[in-house]
Image (cartoon, rainbow, N blue to C red; front, side, top):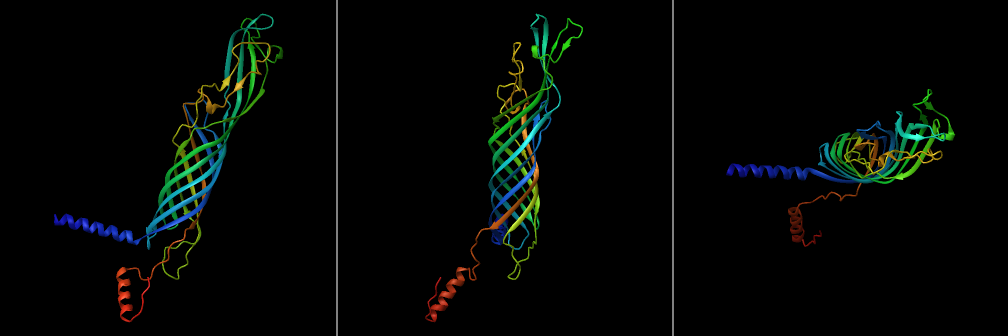
Length: 327
C-alpha cells in the first residue's frame, strides 16, 4: 500500500513540475492557400475532375509547451472562405435511341442521339471551419484534424456536341445524316448554365511545413524575440461525405416521341452532380500550399517576487521599520 501511494505521489509531483514548466501562448492571425481541387466519383463513367481552388481566413492558435524546450502542442481553430473551379471532361459518347419512328414519308426508322465532348464545369464558394491539433518542433510543425465545408454558392456550366441521325434497316444506306427536315444534325453545340447545390462536407485534413526566418529556442533577456511567426506548409483535404445531391434527374434527357420539329430544341443536359445516373458517390479532394501568419496576443509580464511567502516576509520586514507595504 505504501509502495503504491509513493508511486502516485511521485507521478503527481512529476505532472505538477511539467505543468509549472509549460508555457501557454495565444496567437491570432490569418492564412491563405491555393491548390488543385478535384471531385472523385465512384462507379461512374466519368473520371476524376481537375481544377484549382484558393482560400483565406482568420485563425486562433493555442501553443502549450515547456519554457525551455523546443516541442510545443498546437491547437488551431479558424474560419475562412474557399473558392474554386473544377471540371469533368468526358470524351466517350453517350447514345440514346428511339425505336419505331415514322418519318414524313411514312418510312420506319430509329432516331439516334449521340452526345460527345461533354464538359461539366463547377464554380463553388464554401465556408470553411478548421479544427486542428498538432506539434511544433523547432522550425517544423505538423497539424491534423477536421474541416467543415458549407457550400454557399455553386454554379454549373455544361457544354457538349450532339449528333442525330436516322437508322433505316430496310434501305441500303441504312443511316441518314444532315437532314434538318427530319431533325438530323451533326455536331450541334449545346450549353446550359444553372445554379446547383453541393451537400455539406466534413474533410480529413493534414498539413506539414516549417516556420520561416530566424528561429531560436534559447531563452534569456538578451535573446532576440520574434513578434510575428510566418509558416509555409503543404496540405491536403479529403472529404469524408458524399457531396452530390443525386436528385431524380437524368444527366442527358431526350424527347420520348418523334416530331419533325423540336427534337434538338427539347434536349436537356442536367447538372450531373444532381442526377441519379452519374455516380454512386462523389468525394472532394484538395492538395496544395498554405501560408500562415501569426501575431502573439498580449500576455501578463513576469513578476519578480511571485511567492506568497516572499510577500508576507516583505510585509513583516517593512512593518518592523514602520514602513507600509503595498501589493
